Structure formats: C-alpha cells, structure tokens
Length: 412
Image (cartoon, rainbow, N blue to C red; front, side, top):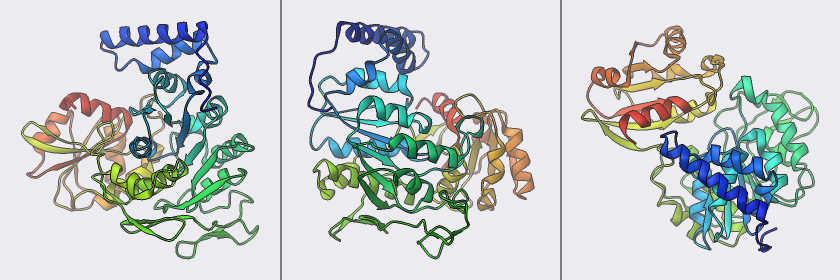
C-alpha cells in the first residue's frame, strides 16, 4: 500500500537495472522507447516487481476502450498540484510497459497508470490501486479483446472486493455493470455518444430502454445510477452542485468528458476541481494526438481513432467541408488484424470532404467508402495524399500503427 517505503529487494533492484539496460539497448538500435522490452526483461527476473515498485505510491488505474491515454495524462496533470507523479504517458499499457514506467518513479507520490482493458483485473491485483477510473467499453479488436459483454463480466469479477474507489461513467451500461460489484463507486455522467454496444441489458440480456439521457432495463430493473459528478456543456458539476468551467486546449466533447472524470479522480486525493481543471489546460497534445504539424508546406492535424466509437467522436471535431481529410488504416498486431469494424463506422458523415485513403488496408477502407457513396482517392503514400489535397489545413485520421507511421514520416 502507499506509504510503505520498504526498500526494493536485491532481486527487484537487479531486475530494474537489467530492464533499464535492455531498454537502452533497444533505443540505441532505433527500435522505439524500449519500455516494453525493458519491462519484459525486468518481469522475467522478478515476476513480483510490479507490486514492489507500486508499494510507495497512491495508484490510479485508468481503463476504457477509448480515451485512456488522454484521461491518464489529464489526471497526472491534476495530481501534480499535490505531489510528483509517475505515469506511462506514452501509452505502453500492458504489464511490461507499466513496469518500465514505475521503475522510473522512485521519488513519486502518485502513480497514474493507463491499463489495457484485458489486463485491468490482474494489474489491479498487483498494485493495490487507490482509485480505478472506468470510462467506456465498446467493440474493439474483435480478434483479441473478445466481445464487450465478456470483458465487462471479467472486470466485474476482477474488481469484486477491491478496496479502490471506482470512478465510473454512469452513462455506459457496460461500465455500470462492471463497477456495480464494487463497494465504493463515484458515478460520473460523462455521456455516451456511441450506443451500438449498449442496447441489450448486460445483467439479463433484455432490451435496454433509453429515454433521453436515462437508460434502464424494462425486464430486470437494471438502471442508470444517480451521478455525483455531471458533465454539463462546458462545465462539470461537482457533488455539491457547484459548476466549474472546463477550459481545454484539446478539442471535442469526448475530451470534456475525460476532464470531468479526471476532476472526480483528483477530488478523491483532495485536489479541488478548480485547481485540477486549471492544470488540465496545460495539455496541448497527448502522445502526438491533436498535434498540428507542418509537412510539405501544409498543416496537418493528427487524430487517432481505433474503433467505431473513436471514429464517431473524431468526426464530431474535424473542421467542416471542404476541409480535406486523409484516412489511414492498418491491421497489424497492435491494431487487431480483423478490419470488419470498418463497416460499423458512420463514414457517410464525411460527405462533402475531399477524402484521401492510405495505409496497409487502404483497399478495405476504399470498399467501405465506395459502399457509403463517398468520393475519395486511394494513394500509395502520405506524401502523395498531401500533394493531391486541395488547399487548407488537412485533417488526418489514423488507427494505432498507422498513426505511428504518420508521426515518423512527419518527424513528430
């Protein structure tokens, strides 16, 4: 638990040293940050290392299908008002990446950790978190993460009996189902734009009724809990009913929702909403997301969207037509190799935009856009797409590895 500052065992120290050395070799070879390989080496030498590294920290875990990395960053900024923070800010969110991040935080007071949905229960067991933030669950990487209802059930079982405060989105029935086995839940009305994974009741399988912002199951009575924190336009309402303005440099309604959840998490640690929200304003971009870069004499805004819910949120924040849009989709290991999710994305929303398609799976995407009745051009490279795009800032939307490819090409 936090406050326990027992020194690391000789084995743990050796594991940390070996992990840092492996990471340094990986960086020197130009293979990325080295955090994952470093963590893997360290955990191989000491399988209990994650718990040992977290013992002196007040830990926050953040998990969701969308918004994990941004919310982790916002919470970390808010908590820095109260002490030093260690965080896996670059999004390496499986046990190896988390271990690497914590190995660099011996002087920190807080650990703010993004966790891949599949690993949440295991990491929560290892690090005894004080708070767990649950944002949303929707279909994603069907070849890897399984169906959302199964994931919600795993969370529900894994979090049962946890002493952590669960800060959870009451507008997502799957999140409510996951959190409702816990003793201490703070409900946040953060909204739910994507509802296609939440029409059947996770408790009994009945049909969900969704009048306005409310929801309930007409068969078993499972229903939306009353929130303590509410996102209301450009403000967050705290449990006392006070309205605090949200000023962000990050665009879109989804990021206001992330800020509302982050304010609720910060409050558990005694950081007032005004202080937390003011600190969040400093965040301009998150691991390249939302950055505007200059490339080949053009301005490109880099946007990440990995699944249908993420694409829907992203479409809501791009500039209107005739702004040109470049779409890039890959299907490598980190993306999930199944691209059937493309058919669930509401691409007709892009009508009127000049559209350019790149990426490993550009032809899969082209078929989808063709069926949607959109005008588009398939390009071999980012450079070709930028050259062909009409004047104005270009919106570039890419899934995970495609986004990393773009960042490397533009030197971001």
